Length: 159
Image (spheres, one colour):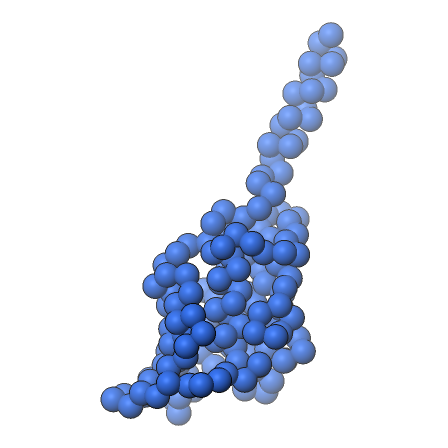
């Protein structure tokens, strides 16, 4: 009987160490620095989500783009630069802001398909947003850390 109890105890401990099978809910609000590689181009931006479905990306580098901000609210995109602002009627399929917004919305709605647990903690998520197939990496605490869309030659690292 002791052997059976010991075996059950070891199995329960092993299962408890595996952690949850889904990531914790994505934070509704956050700000992160984003390092974006799009083809041969490299950008740095400040990404802010005030609530799911709203996203603001303000470029900080290269210098030529510093101060340019793109705000996404649902399907409406607005471009800001200094005192100028214009609403965009469409975003290209390769637009990383729309891709990032779609990934964050899927995480906020806890409806991600293609979720896999990573060895050592965290998750990977594969899906489609804004017409692009993507792979995202989520840390053990539920924070989105990376999104890539190989067909668009795009990689976004958040810190």
